[in-house]
Length: 346
Image 1 (cartoon, rainbow, N blue to C red):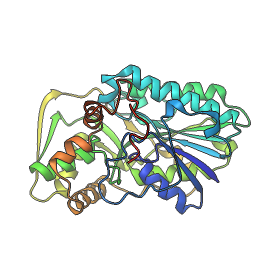
Image 2: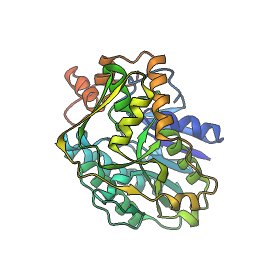
Image 3: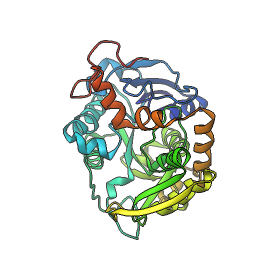
Image 4: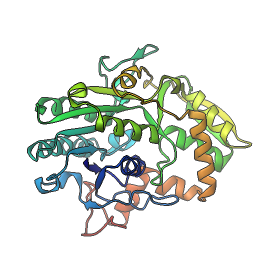
């Protein structure tokens, strides 16, 4: 199958591209290069690519593909809260534009990377895909809007599926240090203490980047009629954990580190546990392989192996800080577009 993978040089894309290649697909990437330099270790996302901002995609970019896997987005809550209008421009409007172009170009499958954070604050009950959507951030709201608007344009020739990923963790060549387990393992390694500013009680569903990639690979070949316009939570119930438990996993992985739950920011309203049974039923053989504890060990080993430093951790691998660095250097404008042709390629 010929697949266009947007955001192929990002945190998930750098893991997903090799997975798709290993499954025998013909993969072409599309990426603006915002995070092209955020590499720790070998870069494994070398596929033929289109250098383009997702907002500037044209019909010619979509011709000849059987499927689009759409990962490209502004991908965390602090960034969305800082610039909600840009978040909606990229995550919502550009995503809908991409879907319409894909439909017009005859692309049958459209796999969209959504998020379990669409459920917001759901309490103690396990939430299924039919649960009310209560997004609490611009990032989560943008994902809800895309699901609704792309569903509205689906038909017999254009079949979207929405994969609601749990909070990702795990090592990727294009590292992110601003997601919870990745961050806490890094803090433990660099300081010796895992500091939790909340009270540690909120629930989070976690899933390894490779298990996300495996879910997309499974969705790509699942019967179209069976998954048409469906949403699937991506993860495993075993990785529904509290923030305090995530901190303990980080401390266990990093020798001689301790946990300090300060509680200074109080309880976090984003708390939810997720039911993942639907994806196991829909995609035969799909079973996430990674536990939070194993992921913490993997992260620590790779941080040590590839020489993670505090400067890299807090600047290059923290999305918001990295974008501010590019803006300060005059490479990005206020809308997060590159100021000169070729910027972001290397």
